[in-house]
Amino acid sequence: MDELIAKFSFDHCSRSGAKFDFEKGKWFNHKYLQEISDDQLAQLFKPVLEANGVDVNAFSDDYLARVVSLVKGRINFVSDLWGQSKFFFVEPAEYEEKSVRKRWNEDMPRIMGELIEVLEGLDDFSSAAAEPVVLAWIESKGYHLGNVMNAFRLTVVGECKGPHMFDITELLGCAETVRRIRLGIERLPK
Image (cartoon, rainbow, N blue to C red; front, side, top):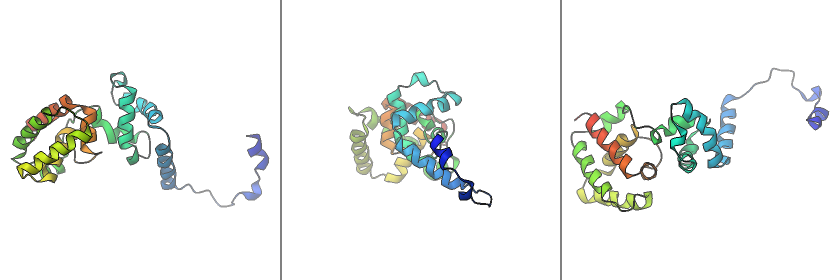
């Protein structure tokens, strides 16, 4: 601080009013958040989770760090983490209307029921193991990949955006993933 004071001079200050570029500030903050470790960011995220009614003690620090690692590229502020990751902590209470209209049709309840059987039959629910099995099943059935995967995402996440689907399901686990698909089948229009 003493060095800053010694080097400061009004001669180097502009006479016009200072301007702050808020967008540039967001960019700097985004870059800063990308540089800190997932563990540090997870600790900063805990108060945001608590403010949104999540019992942080119900989730391990490792789980929180893994969630953060999947979504931190999409945030400018720590508070943005909630909007990008809330589905890791709470099931969808509603489903994005536009995605429902576009991605859910009369065949989807049946197809999602078949998907449940595929998922429950997996010995390894990791992203690397589950993805090729599910994609092969979709291809073998002649289903449209985009339609099935987006309906799958819709039931689990509540909207058709977010990190890689199989990274999401790996973190949620088989039981929670299947439970959410069943809820989606029940709640979404037939």
